[in-house]
Image 1 (cartoon, helix red, strand yellow):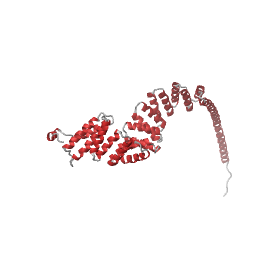
Image 2 (cartoon, rainbow, N blue to C red; image 1 turned 45 degrees about the horizontal axis):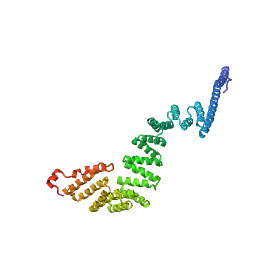
Image 3 (cartoon, rainbow, N blue to C red; image 1 turned 90 degrees about the vertical axis):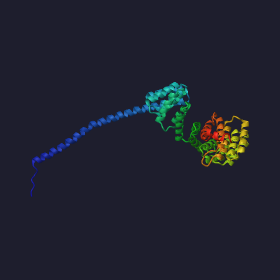
Image 4 (cartoon, rainbow, N blue to C red; image 1 turned 45 degrees about the vertical axis):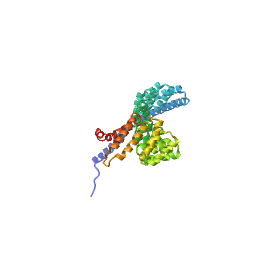
Length: 408
């Protein structure tokens, strides 16, 4: 087989193809050239902007350094113009606002300090620290309501801030708004369990509002911080008895008495816990120890009478409670104990089906008469009222009096 030479048409075709490729390459190079020029200009502009920014930041640092030196040397008036200059260059400079406000505060110019923080907030409304410190300045000016609003905003923006919650709790407490104060003090302790001073305030609020479960937890937290805190041990022992956690109360109060053998209150609370556990003979011994320390302690004398009654020795109970009357005939707790003794004497007159015999009803009537004498007492009045209500169904009825007369 033989091949013929390429025709003229084919040769022209290859030449045209080569030219087309060369033109495309040239066009591509020309198209890239303007883009390269634009990129270089942008880079030059960015470099210029960065240089200006760096120079400004350097100037701000120098100004703030000068201001900081004045501030450190307590030359607050000299520091102020430098800080204002820094804020002119950077209106969002957080540190400059804080230092400027502090200068005015140190100069006892609270009005200007407030204005500084208001300016700061206008630049950065979501900065919780600005709101918190504005609240502090307003509080120092005596504007508690406005301060509260700022502290509330600070807590909203910084829910994990111990100091924000503490500031808000303090101002609530100052306005005698105990419930929200308790809420935020509790939050402080939740965030930082080592805040002993907060736990102490919280304990007082819990006690004031008879929040005994919470009070026990607060005292337990205080003891974790200081296991040898005798005051907290005493208060926790008392709270345990009020919560009917008597075994825990006995253990804790006995531990306290080992290291503080002259603590009369510890003996009193321990005796209460022992009575609650029906360990009356131990309670009697405990109250006697309290009376060795304070022979005329009315509470110990009354509690001893109650313990005798609970152990079934009513004659000693009456003898003991009469001693209290000689020392203070108006002592309200004495009437409560007398009521309890009458109740104890009524127990043998209760039938198996729960019905109370006439003699028992007369004892209950005498108990109610004693409780009524304590109704006006701020400490025992509510307890006496509850006792009266409890005994009311067991008191003599007109029918009882008709059938039994005044038989005793």
